[in-house]
Length: 299
Image: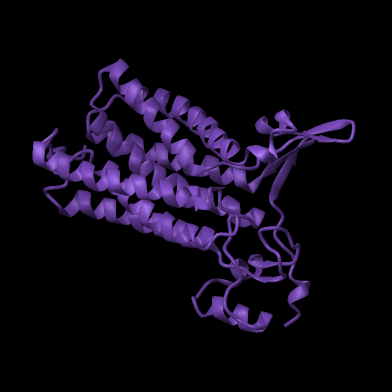
């Protein structure tokens, strides 16, 4: 096979006037939209006002993106300190400027959204466990689809897969039953700091997307078949489930945010995993809002 003839997918979906619309943004919007639709369905079951949810979704999404960007900028400050405009995505090209917001960190968006949800629920006097039961699975939906934006950009990938030759590397990926269009995109010809050699790289975006999708299925099954599944348990489940997957997948990636030799995402995952386990145990022990999800009937 002539591996060098493989062309990467175009990260731009289409153009509106002089503005390029990227697949990355499309998948983020698609993920957020599906999360909202699912949230509206569950909100109806839990007797949560839909206007409350939609207003909160809009503000939460905006603040989440800001938080994700700030988290990335903080831990990559050396890349931004000499060009402050690049923090908000304004890139100088000669005498002109372009806009490209590259670099969002999921954990930053998560923390920003959590702070907003707590304050929003307190202000509107809405039970935070009910809202958490909507928001936590929504994160999984958004992340499941959002990672496909990384796929089109050939980013957030892992290191080279096993194999001494390109044929062997391709065969290794094919052995995982990965479709050809994904395998092709994982052949990276443009070398860089995160892809120092030409070859086939781990599709860590796919690993994380599938892990998150499995988490969604588990939540659906728990809600349907487990009587002792309480409203709000999705919060702790998300913290534990996502953190496990992210910790191990992050170890494969070649573009981690690092401080003092420690991968930030892995350290954060350990903290969130611990919070999820301890939070679940304490909630059961003190019986904090012990209301079964099954007690709310579908309309």
